[in-house]
Length: 191
Image: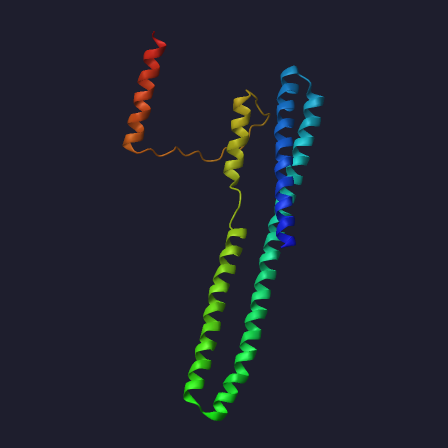
């Protein structure tokens, strides 16, 4: 439980750093608009440092969450192991007595333990898959950087490598709505 709390705290700290990064980005734009390259470089270094620290906190938080899940899984496995170890002597006693009803009951309990194990294992696998399935698409990162540059009218010496851009697919109703809105906008412009 403590590991999960630590993971959440790291996520909150990461979000705070991301907010600081946004504020520093505004300072970069202001410095560039004023032609103050030295200040812009200092602000850029701060942005990069905050971004790296935020990313490290996120990564460590994810690892802490994964560790918490593994520990929970180990605890559940230990409980199941104890249940099985209690069931085995019962099976041995039943075998000595050859009581068919007792054997059937013990085997039923044994099967129930394995069913519970399967359910808990699936839960753990689901949790682990959700922890490790998130990744950042580098084309999205490049697009965001280009979007920021375009929004603030900045050019980069040497250019950047363009990622593939794909349009958003719209159905016919959405396209008609967009066309109608464009016509209304055009009419308002002519008033």
